Image 1 (spheres, rainbow, N blue to C red):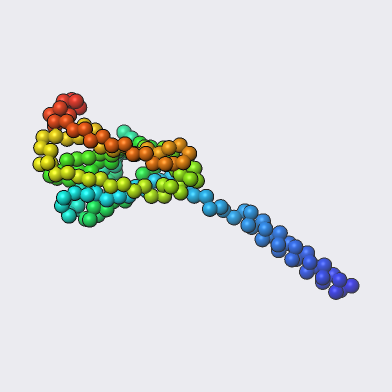
Image 2: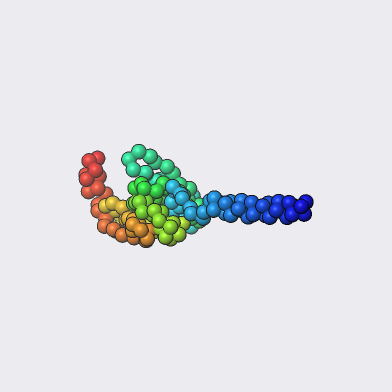
Length: 173
């Protein structure tokens, strides 16, 4: 009888152990990544090799402004929240200032979008101010948005330039 009780105990112990392991597997967190930040990265190109004096301002809506570091070689990387509209402003003395609008809605709203947009990579080219003397861009030179569902990045360009005085008059300066 002692051997039968020992076998019954061992059987119950093994069954309990497997049940505990199975429960642990189902209760383990999944691989699903939920993030509230989008990583924007890229290169700033210009006809000079020094990007140390570049200012990259990031306006988040009408309420926040932050600055992102640009490496001396022109590389930049920073995080912006999802579900916001951000304006990236690239400024360097002696060059024409450029801005890019980024609408982060739909960038990470599905697994496919999260996979496609782990890092959003794009480049910006700054032109020397003397190449288009007296002109500046009428607005953002690029707009980045993301398709709902797939998260596919869409990019629109607008290189329209206006005389510096015209733009100042439009803003009421």
